[in-house]
Length: 137
Length: 231
Length: 96
Image 1: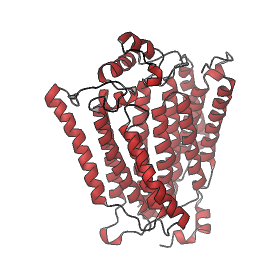
Image 2 (image 1 turned 180 degrees about the vertical axis):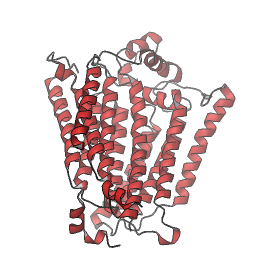
Image 3 (image 1 turned 60 degrees about the vertical axis):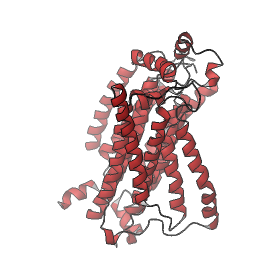
Image 4 (image 1 turned 45 degrees about the vertical axis):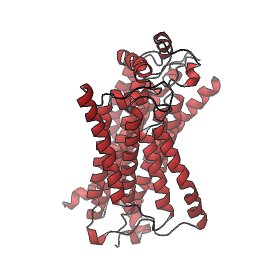
């Protein structure tokens, strides 16, 4: 896919703009909202924006996925020159491996945070941060 | 007042972030040039693994993956211990009644297919997109379907912990065998085979299969713990 | 080529819209469905950015498991963001 179709900055950089906007929306939710579940939702939205930003930094225009499948090799012998020529046209695999780790760890963080939310609700019978602060245990 | 403060702070943050990002030439510039070229060439040539992302996750950064699986195990344990209510006053299931006969029969038919898909995904992790984490999550989703459809469907915590411990011990001991044999953790001591065959890549498919069993058991236990909380 | 561009712009706008919806919605159950929509759109975008491994992970974890854990939490606690509405509509949640 060639994103330089219209020669416009806004089309070319729409991935970056979208991910920054999603990051800002998530941070706003985590900072302003008073309900604890809404805070966790804001953190999850923030996570999605960071993942999109990392993947789009590693993109190569009209590149292929970093998999040496039989359809890509087309029966050519597996010499060093062929591999180097194929690897010129592949997207960056390092951010993909990092984001793969980050998604799984993000799920673990969300699960532990939500179990803490359930425990706080059992203790205080409310989820509003201001009321929990006023109760003083 | 607080909202105005937060919005102005976020505007400054976003402005600086976009100013930095607009200097990147999108689609034409990389930041990991040396590392990327090494991985993309060494993965099919030396390791004979078709999927480069799998080669990075399991072989080049395999110790990191062991830490990641440990973090998932700690999350499961922490969730169970935070929600603990005492052995004799366990809450009832959050699923209060069974589904209709269409739902129960359909999920009974779908359950083996979902498990088979998950096992396929983590056995073929070095050839096609997918791997241990994705396959394990698909297996856990199959158990979630059964737990939601039936009122009194239960999985045994003992079996889950045995499967999980065996998978973790296998992962760590394969790494230690490599340490004794070749001088570094997870050093490959098996033959590599040919590219794009099912039995290729040395240790990588075996380790991804153990990761798949471990992640599946951990996430099934996590879902079961969370569904049992109804007070 | 132009269809790809239109599809990508539509998906990006849908993602921003779902993010705003899931932060602004007062009913927490609808907000959680909004985060599931974000993950679904994100996995399609990963596929278009040539990252099929990450797309599969996001589709399995973000769409299915995170949504389920959020819904279980809402079932065990409260459904609305305002405390008044919780007391008015769900009296049996606070009795036990």
